Length: 189
Image 1 (cartoon, rainbow, N blue to C red):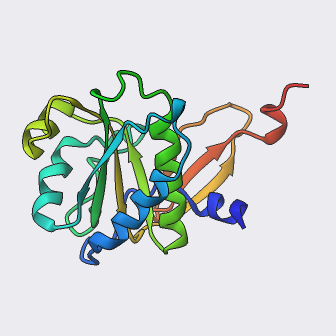
Image 2 (image 1 turned 135 degrees about the horizontal axis):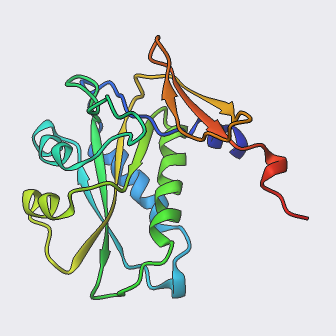
């Protein structure tokens, strides 16, 4: 059921790094993205796959993790993603990517959840550093990075309290809590 997949699809930031992802698993996720809608059917997105420790180590230093957890520098060795998909916009096809990459990434994440994996969409990226590290050609705009692996953490949804604070947090056991607004607060009649 789609609602179950969506509820299981959380932003996981700690993974079992030692459990490798096969190239075929990442290709299957990109195939889901390939089938998603695209503005004017231009299909300008390209995908750089990373599934080896060597390439993963080139990507990790250029990502910024969990802005609200100011005292947490990101996943420690052993907790880092087992793979990545770098989402790129081909500027020779289009200069405007609209929401294509958001649709594509959500589709890939839902496929990952269905396959027993989890992920985190990362938009806080040192784009120039990543471009240089991976030798990404200039005509490919770095849009997002999808970090993937088998989750090594529990993420639970909470209701936003009366203060209205939407910042996520971790408790003393390392459980990641994510406040969500009530459905009634989102609908305008």
